[in-house]
Length: 367
View 1 (cartoon, rainbow, N blue to C red):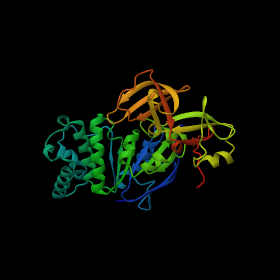
View 2 (cartoon, rainbow, N blue to C red):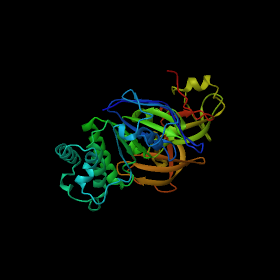
View 3 (cartoon, rainbow, N blue to C red):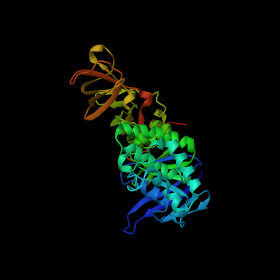
View 4 (cartoon, rainbow, N blue to C red):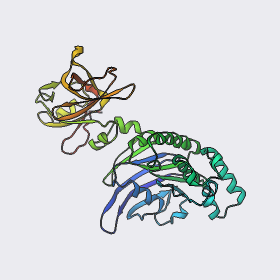
């Protein structure tokens, strides 16, 4: 187990393209950190700098308080699991898992002990004599994990290891990875573009965009307390509904021909002091915080018309429009609401998020 510390780490390629800016954070011993963000955000580059596969342009990286910028990858005591498994097709599962220890000329008894231990953890014992082509995708991924585990490294690096699996198998492997982390208590750095993986696996999430860290927080905090519009819109399935609306001169939220009283919202005094009254502002509302009902039910709310109803089982997603904005709400309405059926909707006012239109930063209430 190990700690890690990034101090203003940056990466600029020879063509002048900067992939990572001012990356700073401390990783605790045994912590599961997930780097997440859209393609090209710098998450895989950051992981490769930890592995020593990319040189650090500036800043410092410490593992157990030892600066490792110029230490070769083989001397960092790090194991990496890749998206494509990178298994040797001519070797059995046993020999794939044992290979790194053989290269290190470890004692044969120790090699056997470590391979059998890892195979037992990963449920691979029945498959040790098979070759990779006779395994399922999930089994191959377990072999790749096992090859890393047998080395007993200080840190595991995982680069989108589940992206080649189907949805059901990804769900199963997420659970197994979480259980594996609890059993090993080893520091893990995991890269993904899938925010569901980030939310379900991480102790803390590092959300990146264009090489910059947007927020570092627990899954709970990054979902319920996003620091800016990008974080709010990136995390969540379906994503947060975003609108640009106007605050009246008296501080009411103008939803086209209707007005919503937000005077009880914690951010209201900040909006007044900050000069937002009488101006456009960006708001965000998560689907579960929009309540919808059939207009025929007699419920009170703002009017709209249903577009698409998607049954998810216990819940359903209802798509409709507010002005020119396409909106999705999560509803427990049991009977399917038909296309073009009149509905009414309300926002749970206390769960509205406010963002500055120019900076896209979150507007907070007095703390």
